[in-house]
Length: 352
Image 1: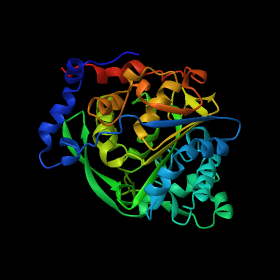
Image 2: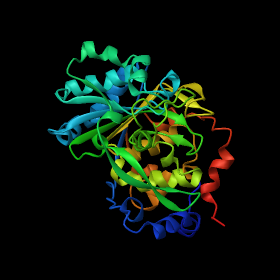
Image 3: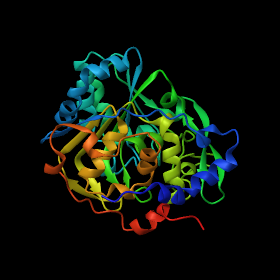
Image 4: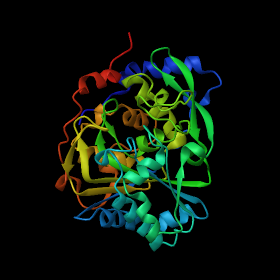
């Protein structure tokens, strides 16, 4: 595994310093209040032939910890619906079922919502297309929520074209201290950030759009989406924004479904990988770090995770992460990266 030394990090992340010099009062980018993660995080890996069972078994080692952390908070299951009509890119219904069964087993099913702001169309279209509403019969207490209709707060993100902060509306539900957020992610490659896992599912699902927004020729006049703004106009911008927002928008629990992952031109147009694996952890960074390894991706290529590791948001050394269940070495695959991977790695180069 390649690593980035301190000098190289400071040189290649000149974009961060440049951004903070423009920020002033916009504390979302300037100096996040970081909290160092535990020195020995734990990640569970499960394998098998049932998505629901994989998710349930991956969560079992954390039962006591999760139950205590939830307390009286509202539980928010956040699937990945980057598209409302491409099943391979979205969180599978059976994965959601496995998580709900786990919550039922620890008696935390009384205040649960499945919530999303789909990227390209009205949220409930995705819920319908992917069969999420079928869960109502088995879990009648669970509510379905469109984050676009539940209020927002403005935070500021960076754009690499003008080195200035830009306002973005973020879901109040995701930001609320009364929410226990579960990232129900899927192992996928990405066209700007190399890989999209548990952190990115939350950070990029939290920006909201106007009700009725549709990302095609039928888009209604006067409607807008804040999701494009957070991408920062390129690989430098997206990596910095993911890093700078991580302290406020990371999930409390990460569940990464790799039963059938996506390789190649993700996050929407890739091809399936029959991997039959699931990763779970109460440490989102450790979960993403292990998932990157299972996907056979060189960790040093994933900019936002490297930034997080360099600033104490997570432990990147696999030798310092406790793995329970299956071994990484026994289930490591080599996911094909996006065809534009060389362009994505511009984040590693100095800004000139």
